[in-house]
Length: 344
Image 1: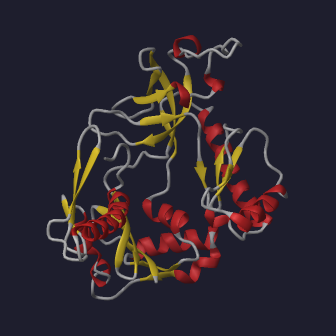
Image 2: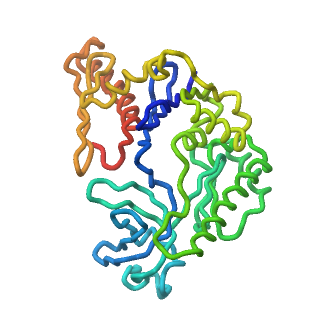
Image 3: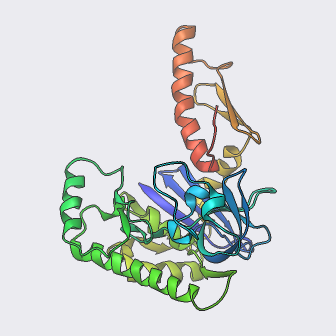
């Protein structure tokens, strides 16, 4: 059975683990003392336009100014519309310093780099993602195929879509009625209207909308029919999760359970030991081989070693077996470590 385990008894962090049986396949950790900015929405002011980068820097209230590429700037913020002819738009011609913008954080600050920003806002609900100022975007999640995709198209056709917005239906929307999808859409539109209203109320920079904490995000984004139960070991966290589920996804209320055993939750499902080994530089494979993961500034290098591999009757079969095991483990490690970008 697949389970979501939420460890909320630590004073400094909240941890969410996804396990299949007792095998850890996803992990998310949030520092209680550090406010997460990703997906939060701010009102900011463009402080510098940098033609060499085709980007602008935005003061949105953080210690470092955020980075806003031209491709992430909606045309509503251009001080003049580009001339026709299909030529390349230059940021210095359409964006000026001092412009106030509503931005969303796409990537957190890292090292000396400020947060990556976009003006194309995305609001995630239970069944869909609303893109209120990006009407060209939208559709149905790529994970949904075949008859389910066709059925969702028919259901979406029954909804009265607001003008000028885009919507992506998530996998959680499979099998839902037009009424249920419509409720989620109305909920997201209410949030967006509150965002725009707040943005008009005062000058930049300030926080408009704080993304939900890890508990609500995890339940909203990952609890589907294949998740048998959600175990939560903290009373406050259990109450928060139960309230959210009762309001947004009541069909799953019976799966939210308060874990009260004496054995710590992550120890019961052998998660602690897997976390320790998962973040080591060298990760062992079942047949005796290993993978070595080395993050660098430019990329992440992964080396596959079959030195002690024992399966297979000859060197080619051993290499194949090692590579198959490595492919599975690398995919798991990338997810656990939240690694993206260039991987070699």
